[in-house]
Length: 287
Length: 335
Image 1: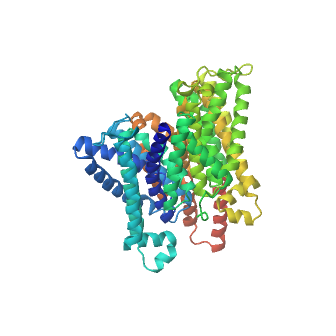
Image 2: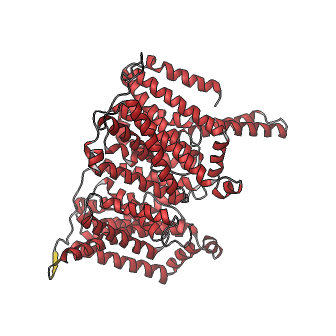
Image 3: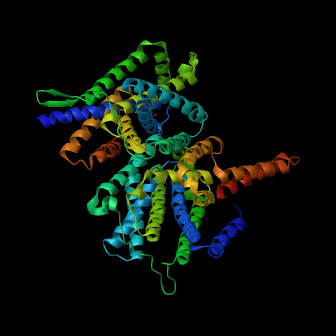
């Protein structure tokens, strides 16, 4: 039974990380209709920035996380301004290819500076908590709690602040938002900034129990796409629920079926779902 | 492109082994041609039909593995295994196409991205079948019939060239046929195509199967050339490479994929330091191309020719310049 609960913890940890990454992806998709293939690269650069701040600059874990979130938010804004903004009226195939271009560039850039080695990032939360035989490493607990807090903060921001309201308005109706005088550029930049910051925080939370390397974004981004298709492209609760579904499927599948094939489980799920419902599980209607 | 230019290109390709200063250059050119065949496949589904297929490199790897496993493990000889590799990629393309092509734009790209990754993971993890990370060794060579022996570099070069010429010829025929125009109609919009009475699914799946067969053909040739393959062949980076070649050359054109592939492979080969920084250059290149030159080298050249033709005849009657426009459009489509 203990092993079963251990898998629940693993599922929650993975689900929280995937959920955070998918949240940023789904925001950009829901508001700007861009499937940002470069999101995984932002996640990866986020991990490297935190590593850089902690190891080379020597600051505390929290400061590194904040610094990395700020850097990646700015990087997100730069991508929006330089790449996606000029492509706003192009055929849909173009922004996908441009996103791939950004992905290739960021990966190569990181590889140039840090090489392709696997790096270990430390964290101040190395303790292990023992609840009557149920063992939870502190970092995993931090991931789960951190994800829930972030989702809560984001919801508050979107619902209670004026800026959040403009973002929601644009997600609901572009034309309507323009009619009431919402600055589309500002919303687009904000969306990319939030999305990037979320990716960086997710990467910083996950890096201490995983490793830091240039290709670390590949699997995560693909799972994030699976998640937002599961949860309905553009839906925030969908991203969280979808993240948990994939996280649990992977934890239990990896434990009870095969660790070697655990990564295929998410994609198998996607193939199955899209074969039956081409518009995704919870989609209100394809955009 | 004019027939004269095409013949010049072909003549150059034929005499190339005599112009090359060493065998390595012939080898590089042969490998560039192999990739070009795969890029032509990508051009069918992405260039003509407008569906961004991110699993293309996966099908290339399937072609290579089908040939590799059939010859190295099952003991088949090259040509039967080669035909089987084509059948395997076509059949898999059919099944993947049936599921994926029901999806609209973004979903299709995301789905195929995942398919490409599944192919990579299966090749890497399914050790009983694919040998996993160890890869496949001792792949059979393409043996010749009678006098020719394709195991030497130069005869192999001509073999690849023959396949390439066939691939381009076939694509040229396709683009001028009703089927090719149907594909282009699909690119311009699903609803529009449907309103013309086009059976969307049937035509999209057909285009996808053609495209994966091209990839399979290229993959099988590649396996016969390098004779050792590993999971790296299914790396998603190869798909991104092919998209770059296609975009640089000119998406949806006939000569573009060849010029883009051969051009970039030669530039990266001859400037060795580029190999290391390849992606630092390719990434921004892709972005700049889609923003400023969405039609690639060939497409932009044709547009430039078209403007030049118009500006050379400024005083002529409006009607005449319209004829020029229509002809140039035709030429662009057929180029």
